[in-house]
Length: 375
Image (tube, rainbow, N blue to C red):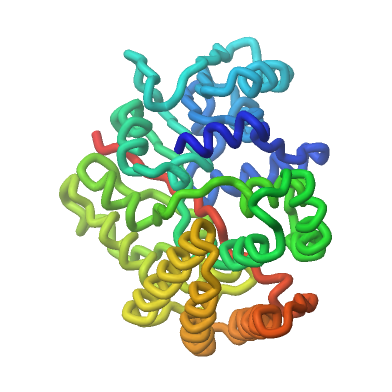
């Protein structure tokens, strides 16, 4: 955690590209609808956002004219830039408030109709503890919006991180590392429709930042919030609930168990953002999670130990992931096989050939999830 704080003092949090404001607002509107939140619901509500960065994601809810919008961040530079950016989107009837504080140190007597925390919790060494602090401020019947990620959804990014570890030296400056990595991965990033950040920002945030050996999946979030919250929506959407509402007779509604089951049946779809295939048996996805998590740990160890035997173990376990992928996605299988061949050649003869099928493989990274606090 301290390493990451130091890193983001050296490298300012990254700004999203919002020059095409209509497109950005439409995307954010679609996100809220995926999460089961009608945009007009935000009108005249109180909203609290933790870790807003430079405030781009606050634009859409502010346009819905809430009564109160509070933004909490520990980075004073971010908060000041956010203040300057958001004033033009804030209507006179909205009380816009900024609080300089970490999430851990934040205190307030107020409860909020909507509490938002994007791109923060999964990167923390104790995500459950941080989530509890965030969720504490949601009013009864209110909405909590967070992001989750796991070893499957970030698997393609993890494999690129391994390449970065192999081709740049830990002692190189950030500028030197970017000079090597931007030409290597720029064409990959250009395959993503709607990406709203520069290649340099993406590489700094995903391949070069200090990292923790932690993921925080949708299932983990459900478990952490079980006592007081019900899962409401996800983006991408994958939860089907065919029950007749008359059969749901108490506050323990069963939504969370349905959410867990749907996650486990569909987690394989998080490995490739271009693909969505039918649900698979849970034991297949449990094995997929196990293998991706093991590769995560091997690469994490390689970053500190620099032992090539660990990379050989990555290749062995990756072959098992490829065999699993053959059963649910031909495109994913081809992409991972391409990566395996390129890495094998690099280890054997020191030549890093250009990727073909793998270049367009990106996972579904972060998933947005909404929860309702029980009355």
